[in-house]
Image 1: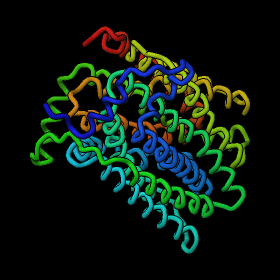
Image 2 (image 1 turned 60 degrees about the vertical axis):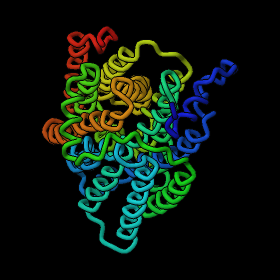
Image 3 (image 1 turned 90 degrees about the vertical axis):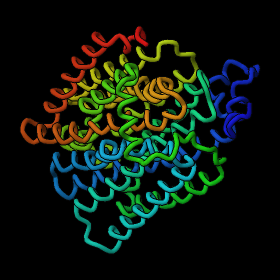
Length: 421
């Protein structure tokens, strides 16, 4: 029987190779295709984190309104809900390399437009909202295509290791991105930050072009709408995927909106300037980076427990962060919250892709993207609450409720404890 083109890569990855234990963490980097994609991912993730930090601080400076800052995050994440399943269908239907390159072209165009406005125009909050919505749309498509590409070249524990290293890149960038953004804003302003982002997008696009163009596992050439209908029917019957989706929705509604409150709490409660805000915004990434490296170094047997308990622990620590009045304590708490975030972020795509057949993996990630689309609602809600009762009280209420919801889900859904099929 003939093998599909990407399978020799997977076969090489699965071949038994004697490696020192200390190199186990980075074993997926032995695959040339993954190594190039991983390096390109660092550039893309760095820009993504920089953009979120820059636009949040920009809107805070322009409006002095917590709810307006929350809109930055809402517009960023809304495409995950609007385009999630469609993006998954696209990544199953077309070569994933082409899809990823196309998203970077969109990012480059949008970044150039925002840079021109900052240099020559009269910037307004709606420019930030439109920019982050367009970048979020590109991210929604890339999210499904990138992780589905991993499943073309890895299987089993190798896939877990590859996703862990991708989360290392994501979380490492979440450390460097806000730090870099805050520093550049202080030194040369918002236009300088966007000039750097544009240069990085060019580098990332060039790196993506060197990746082998593995063929996507196309599920026929049925019309896209029919594919989407079939995907909804198939995925909704998959108990493991549905269970994973409930945690994704919960953490994105109750947990990740904390990102939109960090600049408000940092400036108005903790007295931070742009640089110290950048440090604070990077703190969760520091913890998540460390946690992702630990996960990449080990064989995880119960992915579901790491996933659900990681989400619960992140929410619990965020409750403490929301009550802190001291910058150093707040910084430490966000680092600890990052450890829980690592368990959630690493196991999420692993569980989703292992729950379905290879030809459905793009759409499985699209379903997860749909769940991530719950975050705009949480961001809008916490922004409204912050206007009514203050940012700390609003975040405490949201994340405290989240802890209860996630633990109840874990109690009633055995799949989240690794006991279901």
